[in-house]
Length: 232
Image (tube, rainbow, N blue to C red; front, top):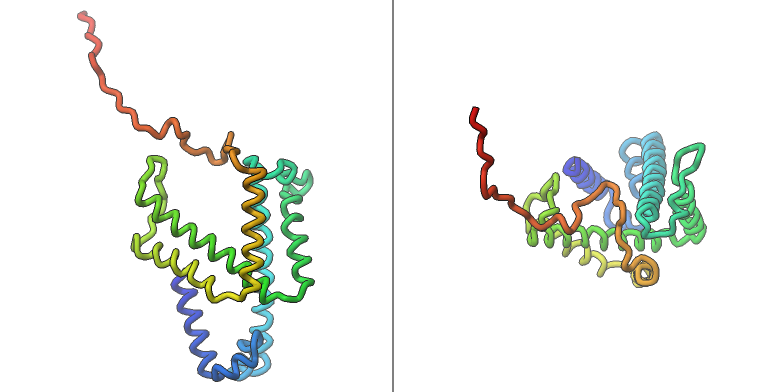
């Protein structure tokens, strides 16, 4: 599915650059793809692309709010954030407090107006997370702890995760200074929260359960004697 998306994305860029020059696309800005559709199909094409873009934006925003709220909910349930955040709504069965904690700041950010900088800051945070994930894959595959039994192994190891690690952090260098400052502030607040609240806490009852550290050392049982069969 990822390859299909990549192919469609490349085809879209090719068609866009065929219809308009780079300078014209720069002037059109965020509405460039709509104007491309208008040139190829007409006004009906522009409306279709505009409507599809609105649906995609709504779907992406909804997924971001729900996934972020579930992350906060899981951290609260494991005791790494205040317990009151993981409360479940009695009627709807949803983590309403976690959703509000994520949704209200997002709604406030939309009123600021600097959406480009905010979107780039969010991309910075995602790139750091993706880069760290690639780094964890390299470390886990190298150390091979006993509890590490993945259901899926990344192909092309170590080249593919290495490229992901370098690309994730390398793209950050091309971002605006304001985005870097905002992203750094988020990381600083997260570090302070960890130091003063979550540091030293352990998962007492993780879900799903993991292998306890005391059970990670292999033990081999060897029989030293066999019970004698009773003679009939």
